[in-house]
Amino acid sequence: MKSVLLPLSLLCLILASCAPSTPLSRIEKHPTTFNRLPQKHQELVSQGKISEGMSTAAVRIAIGNPSSVLYGENESIPFERWDYTKISPTSHSGISYHHGFGRRYYRDGSGHLRRRYPYSGFGFHQSVRYQRKHFASVWFENGRVKRWEKRRSY
Image (cartoon, rainbow, N blue to C red; front, side):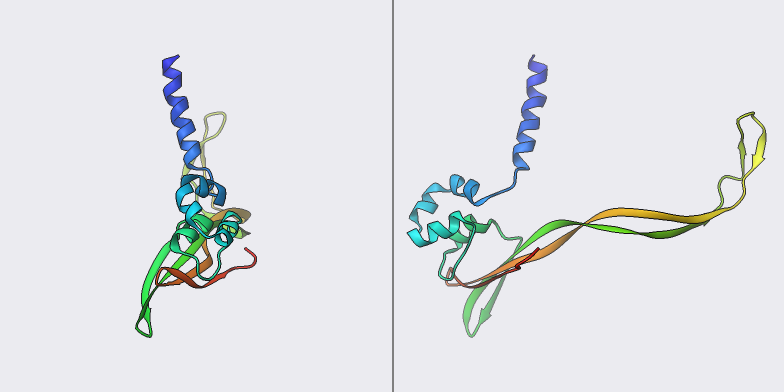
C-alpha cells in the first residue's frame, strides 16, 4: 500500500502544477492583496481584465506573471513594460521527395542474399510545432498602468 501512495502523490503534485492559472486561482493565492484593491479594480481583476491606473499587484492577479519585463525611460520618467506570450500549436503539412539507397545487400525471407536498389518517391507529411506568440503588453509608470494593449483574436 505504501509503495503505491508515493508514486500516486507525486503524480497528483505534477498534475496540479500543470493546471492553468486563472484569475480566480490567483485571487485565492493572494486574498489580502486582492481585498486591498479598490472595488472597481476588484471587479475587473476577477474578470481577468486590466485598466489604466491599476497597480502591478492587480495586474499580476488579473492576467498573471509576465513572460518578460523591459525597463526604460521616457522623457526622464522611468517605466516598465510587461510582455505576455502564449505557446500555441501550429500544424504544418506538405509533400516531400525521398531518394537514396538502402543497405547494399539484404537477406530475403528464404535466406537468399539480394542486392538493394535505389529508391525514390513522394510522401506526405504532417507535423505540429509549438510557437511562442505575443498576446499582450502593459506599460507602467510609477507602479501604475499607464497604457496596455492586447491582441483581439488569438
